[in-house]
Structures are given as C-alpha cells and as structure tokens.
Amino acid sequence: MNKFTISNLNLFYGKNQALKNINLLIPQRQVTALIGPSGCGKSTLLRCLNRMNDLIEGVRIDGSLTMDNEDIYGNIDVAQLRIKVGMVFQKPNPFPMSIYENVAYGLRAQGLKDKKKLDDIVKKSLRGAALWDEVKDRLKSHAFGLSGGQQQRLCIARTIAMEPEVILMDEPTSALDPIATKKIEDLMESLKQNFTIIIVTHSMQQARRISDRTAFFLMGELVEHDNTHQLFQQPKDERTLGYVNGDFG
Image (tube, rainbow, N blue to C red; front, side, top):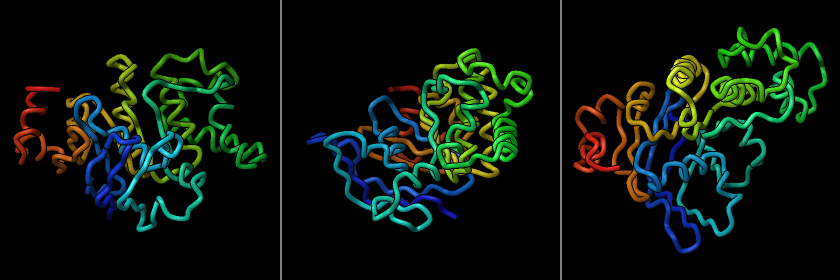
C-alpha cells in the first residue's frame, strides 16, 4: 500500500523552480530515504508532505500530491494534516519546559486534561522513543538538561504522542555523535512497525543502513527511486552511480 502518491509535482520559489516534475510513490510503514547533494530539492519535497512550504512567501505548487488518496493541497484542514504528518527537525528543538510537559504539550493544546490519560500517553510515547528508562525518574526536570541525542528522541516522543500516521525527519542525526545516531537509527527500525517514515539524509551510509526505499534527487529532479539495496548496488542511471560512488556531492 502506498501512503503518498506524488504526480507531476512542480514547486517554484518565485521564479526559481526547486522541484521539477516529481513522480514518486511512498509506501506506508516503511522507511523511505531522500538523498542527493545540498540544494537538490529533497527537503523541499519533504516539506510539501505536511504543507510546511505554505509558510514561505512566493511559493507556487502545481501537480498532484495525495495521502491515502486524499488531495493534500485540496480543501483540507492543514492543522489536522500536520498532526497526521509529524515532523522532526535537523536540530533537536525541545520546548523550554520539563521533559513531561514537552510530550504533553500538544495533547493539552488539543484539550486533553485527564491527568491519568496524559500520564499514560507520556509514558507510552517516551517508551516508543526509547527514552523512558533514561528519564523516568526526572520527568519534571528541564528538557534542556538532556544530551543532544536524548533531546532528539524527546522530540520524536513529542511527535508520537499526537498519534501521527507519518513521521518526517529532516536530517535528524546530523547534529549528533555516532552513538546517539545509532540510537535514532535503531529507533526508526522499530517505529516503522506503526508509522510511515520519510527521512532526508546527507549520509549515504545512513540511507543504506536504515531505509527500505531510496530516492535520489539532483538539481530539483528525481533521478531514480528504488529498493535501497537495488539503488546502491545496481543503479539504473549513471548520475546515481556517480553519486553513490562519491564522484560528486
């Protein structure tokens, strides 16, 4: 089953065309990696999936982008879309409050006041983000006291708490050390049992380790997308071969 269907998608920042005729199917409950050199359009495409590009002045989009056969750019509630399609950013961005309140924040904003329910969801979300055992005795402590890797897992827990269907990750480990990176990668493996995950990564090794499918972008074009093993071992396009071999990028 495909979660997203992208057809003939073009995106312009003013007169500059950032995405050129993108056609891509993204399967549900798998990890899809978007790779390519800086400025190739991968983060721009990621932000199309939860309409974050709406926040940028002068953006124009044409083509079709559906999630579960519903037009993302049709007459839909964008706030609800962003709950269904959660996002984890490049740098950990916990809120300036306690660990507990970081996870409970979105739930409270949705009107949930029941203390037991909040406790249960906070615990379940921190477990889901492989963080519970490390923080269960200091839930009232400030989130800024956590390490970078723990902060990123807290941001993942905050996203999980809203029960999304999709988690977008924009280079989520680029600010982390190798040990913290490994924890996030292991976490993605378990999260895909319940969520569709789309990750932008500048690391081809990471894409190879964690993704089921990989899409390679170059100068706003989708050059090739395939099963990850196939794309790295036997790419069909010479540009893909050059990139995965480290000839450029």
